[in-house]
Length: 247
Image (cartoon, rainbow, N blue to C red):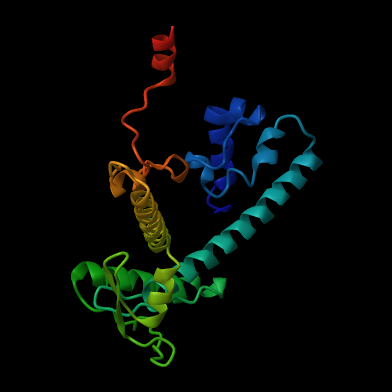
């Protein structure tokens, strides 16, 4: 990237679009094009490019280059891990073929990387099988049995022990499990209130003069401290009316 003009490209972009924002430290490296590898690694170099002495610029440039290399290596490892977990560890009819190329020897890049990559892509475009064999990882049935399970929470069929373990830890499954627990707690609370209301009604019926009571549903859907399962005294009047009559 450096030999192909990365530094010049960053300088041009900084001068044309970003000089003012970067100088004010207003640039957000978490959104948009500034997430790309290269911008944030050379931030200090771009800011002080016109105001620092040659030695300082050289130090900042070298620091940015080292940071760029580290970020690139980290990103490459993350990509390889994602490809292996997404494709090579989940065998199935819809999984595409994955081809591995040895990039460790830079001096043999054309022979080990460029030529095989061109051959693979050309074969794909022409509808032919590549000469190079795709990568394969033997599945161990003892570690990942291909049994199927039905997740009644998510209404999905999961095949494989490893896939099931991953599904039960996923955000969607945990969200449905939380909703199920909340629903069960609400149902238990309603059943408890019904039982308490039934007991209160039975107790009050023994001492009731006219047998007039609220229904059990009134008790269930009101707070316990304001439960309506109580004897209605139809002869009593509000205190305000009683005071008026006395006057």
